[in-house]
Length: 260
Figure 1: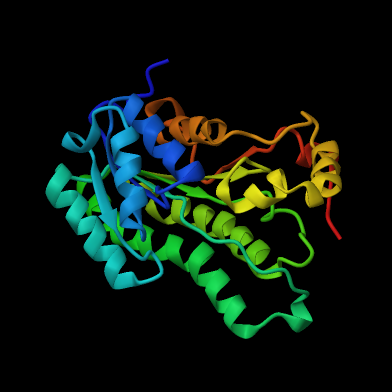
Figure 2: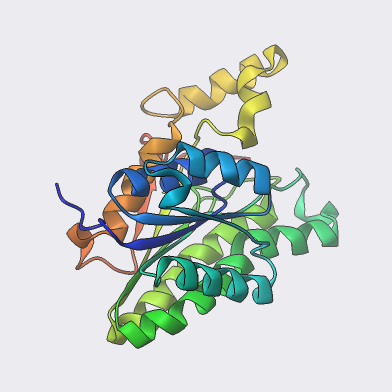
């Protein structure tokens, strides 16, 4: 299937590792020109080196996506160096320290909301200026199964990811007249640096097995499986899809699981 991504300019946030790196690599393999964004310069350089075409084709841009001015500056850099911006993937985020809502530190709440929700708004607003002018564009936001389902002890993260789904719908409605589509992907349990200790520490074996038992497919996803969904939504094959959330969770939500 030709996804229509060849020579498209794509910006991927949180591209220094995990799902973000897999998304950047997947776009590069389809012939897109990719700008990899993150705060850590060294890891970004590694991402670009791993992508098909390397540094001669793609771009590493250091950026704190929780800063609206840096968001605008980073995308101006992308447009200047790569000649435009066709697709934005808002993948950057961070986990929350476990805490019940009534004992949650206020700074922890603010950081979780800024990193996981406000950043999506900042980056999308910075991207859409040129997309409106060219009357085309695609935005894919990375949410989580923690958005539609209540996850005890990570209330700030869960609220932020639910907000991403709602914000995506608003983007789709407000920007459709300019030829811009907006969708989201909600990954489930995925092999990433965020849960490395859970997956590798023998002390967590019982918890790990309990989580796997709740997944219909009895395994964690690998990052490329989320990347494949992102590519579909971003490309021409999804030209009549907007405002939707695609869940990539191995059937976890299909059985109606909640946590508590």
